Image (tube, rainbow, N blue to C red; front, side):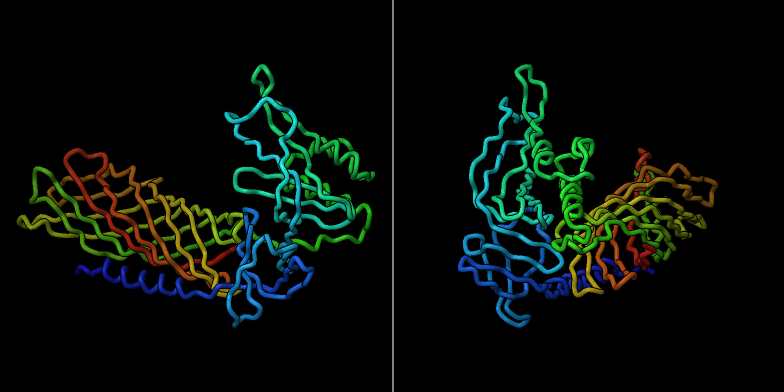
Length: 401
């Protein structure tokens, strides 16, 4: 029996995206200080900025109107226990970091700009970060001193060899004096958020053993491993270019699937994006008459596949969220056969690939996903045959860690 799968799928996806469009936008407790020095407690829309913002959305109360505050009227803003930004006029070098666009000047080309810098470490020594998507720059200050750039630049020698201005290491050596911060540690410190944060944290702890960095305390689980079990609704039609009487419609059949999914959460935009990789096994069987006498065809489909893709989350609250994902699916191993009653057996089925689109709901460690696979040709290696393999999966998942 053939079911109108596409019709049901369309209805479900329309309902799902309607839920997304009406999903609650989360505003979190924070504050901002305006140019008059007035501190305003409010709720700030936390989008976990990967690129330093020039404005942010806020509400005075959960039910009040959403407003926008920009860099021109803001001295500082923060989301408690998450992030903090401060406005500063600093010299910034925007020289390209791409090798084919490097110049021959060792010294940075500093130009003063008004920026909202992200405070990465706050204490006796403060570390600040800035990114516009193309470059990343870091700045520092000691106690109440002015904010200054940590100097780093790639450039070319006259012989067009790659050179590095790493004056930031000398700046750290000169100003962050502590027995625990050795010259060898400084030499190993790359011009990255991770390495610089570690050095500045170590200095502040050296000055005060009870020091804790209160700017960013939120811990992010960047990797999830999930067990995924499900049911596939599969349909397969085969076509023979020279023998239409041998065409087979195997109809819709249910099949079982099992797999594991690894999910790497990208460290920006507040855990809303993830890269997923899922190896899984699925199978289904069917037997149909050919319409020519008593001839029939028997399908025994078994495959190990790998889906690699991108996922986006829509948070509803702290415990639940909706998600959508798109994946490229390829066949890793296939031991499938089509056996005809007159003795013909096709067993060289492989190199099957296609796309998959999914949507689902996540509650704590559990999730449910509906996934649609675009039609695939299992006779890709055959010159005189064609086919359409269609799969829709309902998958239940549990996060192991």
